[in-house]
Image 1 (cartoon, one colour):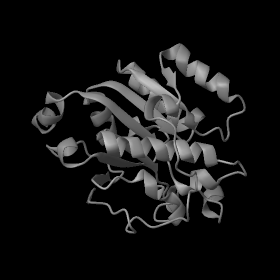
Image 2 (cartoon, one colour):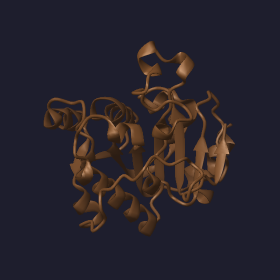
Image 3 (cartoon, helix red, strand yellow):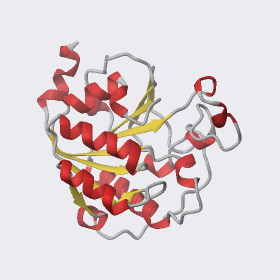
Image 4 (tube, one colour):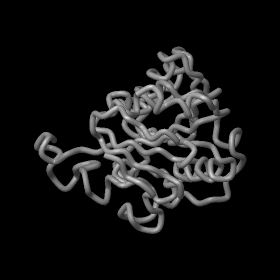
Length: 232
């Protein structure tokens, strides 16, 4: 299958954004005011659109039948097919492709030529547990992988540490990472720094945002921002 990745390996990107689980359920959990966080996430996506920066996104997807009883009530998070499992509308770029959470390794030959955004549905907080995501993130060449999103102690940590393990340069956008569920947010970031990650603020990358931090209502995949292709 190596030839399928040949076109990817020929090109090296200056930057790649890694968007971790920016989904409605994860935004609305707890009673935190996430307006600044969402404003920064929205700014990063606007920056990606203007600068044509590729984006690799993950979307946590839990199956009802495989979830513990605790996940089967009305407070369940990111259940497959639910409105809360969907990504924020402004985290969907126009040219995108969605890969289901199967165990296949194949990837389209011209993946990042045809699509600016690649979205992986994942069953685990660790995106590298999905073979396609592991393959793309491991083989993709970039001067810098810029990580942001939800779950400092879970999805963010797994993503950053696994990229560093693969000898990638990784930078965390500290004001575009959720604080929910982590007692000492600063300590969590410092632990990633010790492992080799850099830190940056949104304004340093993309300038000051004039966008609001409104999340909007939970919307299905097919409304205004459409999935151009779904594989698996």
